[in-house]
Image (tube, rainbow, N blue to C red):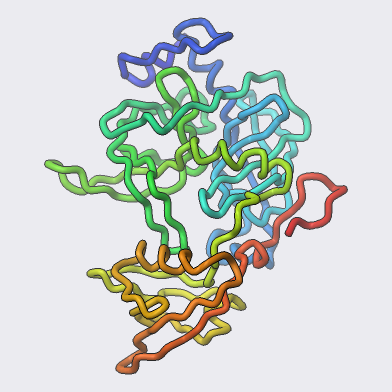
Length: 334
């Protein structure tokens, strides 16, 4: 049988977790990685941008049947199904979503006799370290990668990770894919395709993985209530981009706080609470520093040749999403 050592062509991969034989075969580990397919509500907020049929991978992480994936695959879903490595299909239920990390959690209705993948420790992962990326396509989906960087990731959708994991070479089916360490433990979940500048080499295609350490403080909350119990950051309902340190609006969410404050695509954001905005990450941090969801956010914008002061009544972003409960006995969350 092929072993992870051979598939990855990485000499340090020896699997020695408790309960497993050394150099555990790839097929056994990969059984915990499944295909996730979700059908989304037609009137969902994310339907227009992400579509109403979504597919990706997920990882079985406990014996209760919880499967971890990247949240956009199952966000605002009305039905979810999971395909196991043997081709069998199981119905699944949405459990939770965390906007700050991007993690999504679902639960299979009928659990198969498969060993969950252990959660590793991503904090020790550094640039240059080898790892594996695996999707739901079985042993043929396993690729050896290296960590290109540990640095912040800034998303145009009011999203920022302080210590994201960037890997090269780029992996095609990244959504929900597993980043696996040398001991067979889960280190991250695939989020997006991006590019990263590598000193001495140039700009390379890469993937960003959400570090698994970010799941541990919120996992119990996701299972119990569908979201983190931490105070929610203020949400403005806009997409931004940055060019030469200038932050401008590229899209407004219909019915969101920014639209209600009459912001428009093309507006250049100059200040938050009379403090100059230095870049996209600085804009997010200045907004979040004002307080929790619901706080008023005073900003200054440049529209055409005119500077305008606008106050946005921020909101809880979860209130604008169609989130389904994990069990039929619960009312819609939030």
